[in-house]
Length: 388
Image (tube, rainbow, N blue to C red):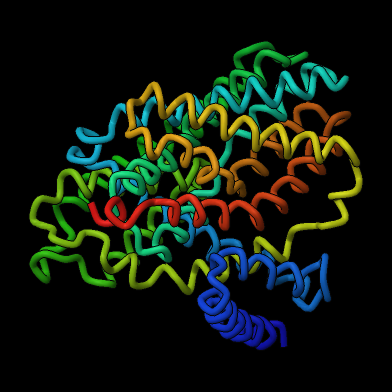
């Protein structure tokens, strides 16, 4: 009975995703936003149509979806791309991460929040949603220096974000000293980078040999599933592992002509599940639980993105016409932020409800509003710059 219900749910979700995709094309809204809204309607904040076991049953598949996105983002970190845009990628990503932490922390502190709690919330606010941003770029059809730089930023900013969060957690740690959170971050980041190298280097030389120039679909699925499974088993970041493996394949697989073509061909069904389930698990009731604090947090994160994005773009010496677009394009926020919130809530149980409620409420907002902002930023590019 349960297996049949699971397959029925899976079929309906895929068909619903197709409908949402069509509506997105008709209304010019990002299909990510349409899928999230559809998930909200079907989930606990809407009509509660999904069976209780659906979220747990689909967790491995959503992890696979994010790993596919990570591979594609890592593929943007080629030597050519880093040579052309490396300064902008590093400077803007660091500026946005540091600027978000400082502005959100400072603003919440000035509004009367405990500075230690505000610091943890500021660090969690640094996270972006690489899946949403990558899909909006893909849907827009824009491919130029701006999208290449934006993809590179999204590929690395969560690495900086995790590091900043670990340092902030250590700064406010009341027991266990500095060592525990730093070791946790080192395991998560270092383990993921090592896993990505262990998979990426052999994959770079072994895949694409059976059919010259392009890995077969079976090879692509095998590498992605292997990366995801090992990352979950070792309890390291599958996002960072996938990005590392993707970057290594892109840089060392010289016999590949289209290293990630097969991943692009198969990722969308997995992404449908990811975005629908993300929407279904969000609790809109949390938006009113903290009142003004939710509004303040959202406003501060928007301001920090715009200000820090502009500052980083100036320091990164990107063209003047593109400088104001990076902040709005980096508004989407999802899983990594919730993961940080879970760690902080576990470390400080007394603050746990506030941290989780605030982070989830902000995630609802930025997952719905963020992708359209990214799409608007891409459409602000002139036709000449859309094709360069």
